[in-house]
Length: 271
Length: 295
Image (cartoon, rainbow over all chains, first blue to last red; front, side):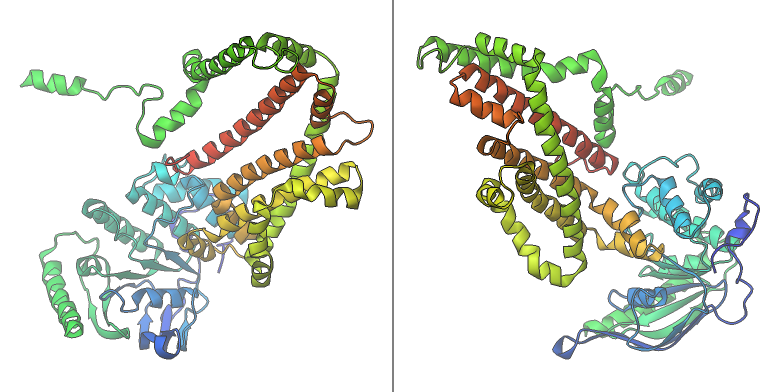
């Protein structure tokens, strides 16, 4: 699943989603996945027997205390690591990954960072120029093409990272606490952004966070993880209409309920 | 009230003064503003004063007759000799020989050092085998290679190249190794997710990320190459070729103290020019990445 094969150089945002979006069945199927690190006395179990389906175009949030294996799960889906047991199937869909650390390459400008993602996908030079501008506009970084990462704020760096992720033309986007290091106001605007883009591009997103409010703000469904070893504790549908706002009272109630569950889980561990 | 609003509207932020920006911007402006006469003078005068002081001390020592005039000439005589050399033929032919050796040897050292560094990073066996050897080689005075070089190659150009390469390559290799070893893992993961594998992984992620340490290693490598070369030229004279080190040796043996000092000034000047070029690139690379801390 690489390019759309479109001859038109003025790709619209809907074309950016690429084909394959219409395939039936879940986008990600996780069956009996366990992951252990080390051996002997140092053996630690990060994930234990995880079963999870992520539907096409679903926005799934994974919430849990630190060390519940949620980042490990993303690494496994991304293929950066392999499960000790079980299978993960993404049906050949292309997977992109957005990390918590600001990872735009510091030696490239914002534009060149996005350009590199396109280049590594084999997009022709003529086509790349327009796509770079288009993608930067999509994440509201128009006019910052020639800025280097260190000249941008933390929020703008993550927007650059987002544009680079979108440049990969993936159907599945994995996000590992991408906004955790941002201040509350910037994070709110990034939430609006990611919600809009997910809708526009029909992306399947798995978003890991320890912030319950963030999960309720963004997800169609939130999965709560137990820790050591990481397991699925419960799944909650988040049925609110989109676009959502940061201060919906219903969302606040649901956040409260989830927080209580999470606290009980943390307390269980402390004891 | 309306007065306040007017005042507020007029309170636009002051236009940035060149060289007075904030943080990285300031250094960038300072770097680009170097051409204006005023900043050039600000850059120049401390150096002029420093050189002036050295010359003054020299003149005082000369006037004290601590050493006979023909052994320690005065600054004016040396200046005269220096001028004769700069306007003559011989010096430039020597400079050409020495620079040709330096550049050829250094270029080969960069190539060998880079490949060696990549090999050490890439293959564990290499790291175990030659990793510590590279560090050891750096501590070895390259002049100690000369007796062997002369045995292997005779008093030829190749003996010079041999020692220059052995002097410079280890520094360059260790620049590559530390640069690549210290690439932040998040950047590597990001590169992997972007699909940069094999050669592309090096070309687009690893080497650019390792660039500051690499350039630092190249700079150090140059210093070693230059020292090895001058030491070699003093020790080994290739027949029918003049070189700076050879001329220095000859001037000393024939008791031309003024020429000795004039040639030393030439050696110093070349060293400073090349160092300036490296500093420019190091600074530029660091500025572009926002690494404005310790330069």
